[in-house]
Amino acid sequence: MIGMMMGVAAAIAAPDAALLDLRQPGNVVTALQAAGYKAEMKINKDGEPYVLSATNGESFSVEFYGCDGLKDCKSFQLTSWYKKEPLYTPALTNEWNARNRFLKIAVDSDGDLREFLDATAVGGMTQAQFTDLVEWYSAMDGQLAQFLSAKRDAAGTKPAK
Image 1: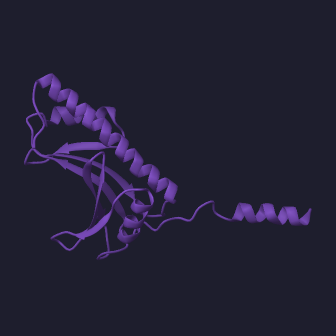
Image 2: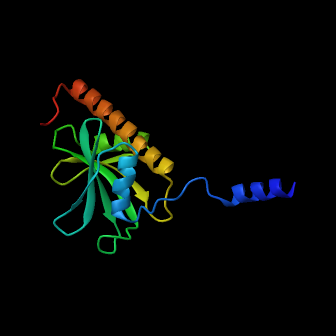
Image 3: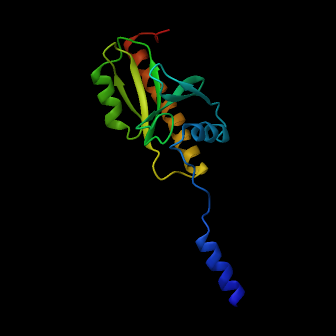
């Protein structure tokens, strides 16, 4: 009986899965690869880290915010860009954003469309949670592609190349 109680106590005290320290960009690379995605660490022109990856046949990046140099980042963002099209308007972004909670879109001053999903790096995530986050991004990216395709069809336009 004592042995059984000690086993139960040990099971309660032990975490189900280790938390990933996603404040470190290199750990995000490893976590993406463990989730089955390609991942390559890069440094932008300002000396900040980012990761290149892909989903649904299109590239996306993981950008880091609130970093101490190349480490200890406070948050990260999964993001993709689409070249300017007449379709990309504030009305389009408002329609998408009003109907979709996690993946948001915006049009920049050049008319390019950006999709993005923000996440905190503080506190960590399990590999399963991180994989789920990236799979959500992938699924919503596919939904955005369908949304844009339907809008192009309705307008009789083609995607930018």
